[in-house]
Structures are given as C-alpha cells and as structure tokens.
Length: 104
View (cartoon, one colour):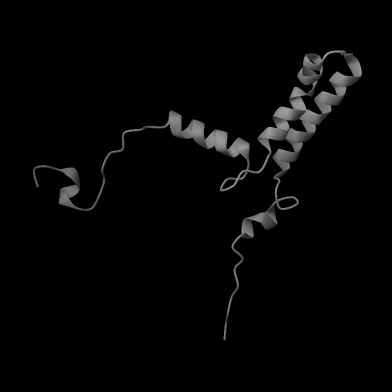
C-alpha cells in the first residue's frame, strides 16, 4: 500500500533554522552591523541618542520577526501595500448569465 505523508509545514524545511530566508539574515546582519559601527564612532550619554543608534538593529529585527499566518512582518507590510495599491474594483468574468453581457 502506498501511503504518503506530506508534512503540513513543508515550506519551513527550505528556511534557515525553519524561520529565515537568506535575505532576512542579510537584512538583520546589516542592521546589526550599522548599529555596531554607530556605537563605535558615536558616544552618547542620553537615552534618546542610544535609541537612535540602536534604531537600525531594532527596525531590521522588527522586519524579520515571525508573524502568525505570514512569513514575517516585512511580508505583512508588503502584502498590505500591494493590496492598497492594487485595483479595488473587480470586474465580473464569470461563467453564468452570458459573462456579463446584457444582450445575450
């Protein structure tokens, strides 16, 4: 008997550590690298300066953070922008009633 077992999360096997694409790790690495460079060149004594220096790492970390039902936050943002910028009026192209033609 040929029984095949297909795992429900088979896409996770293609990801690094089951969570990240190579682009995600490059983006996060660049954010961390910029933060380290800023910390080494800029000395700060107040909390706002520290948060400003930490912002590349925080923003890149937020973008690659896993989100339920999506890959990560960057995917949610890009899908939202695609939906907002796409056509919102949908033209019926069905198979019934003469395909929308009133003469038939």
